[in-house]
Image (cartoon, rainbow, N blue to C red; front, side, top):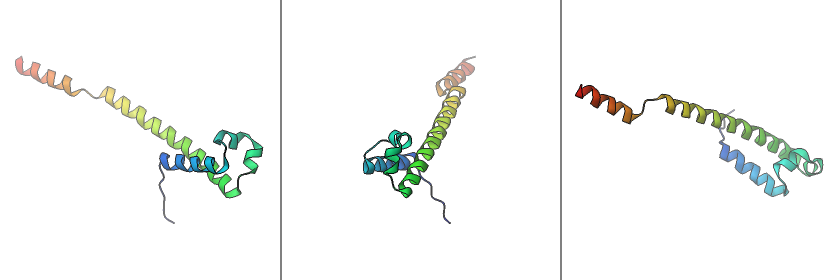
Length: 91
């Protein structure tokens, strides 16, 4: 079995397709039994899976962004490094 990697964009695109196909939002799909009953079993499974995957991918993206920002804050700036080098040469 081969591994397939999908991006958040792929998942969001598929959710958009399902919303357009059935004419209601993901919120309606998850909370309104009438809407959910109009969805085929296969699409219901896929829609639920996409919603879970999207949430997980967004959380991972946010965590990566937080770590990136922490790294930027902790890394010395290039300007500060050059200023220190000039001061060291002058001294």
